[in-house]
Image (cartoon, rainbow, N blue to C red; front, top):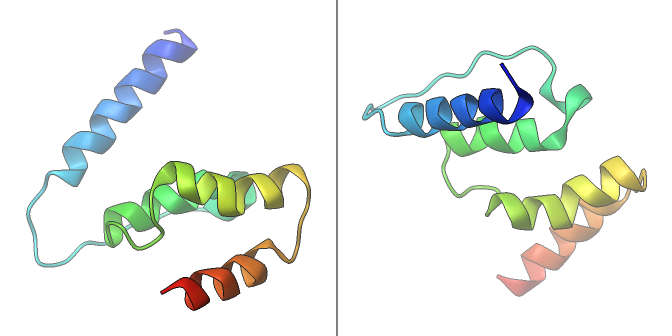
Length: 86
């Protein structure tokens, strides 16, 4: 199975799981933050939709600065900016 095909299958599975109706949700995971912050976003999006904003917004505000540039202050800085704008 090619990379594109497996990604499409995972996307479809993710979309299907998010359609489940329930009062409670649980996510079991290994170490998403050690792999990619987008995995953390995906888990939290399932548990509490919208909490971290859009995937693209999260990627720009947190994932890229932290993963690509090792910006240890990105979370703190963005948290202050977010708090002052809301």
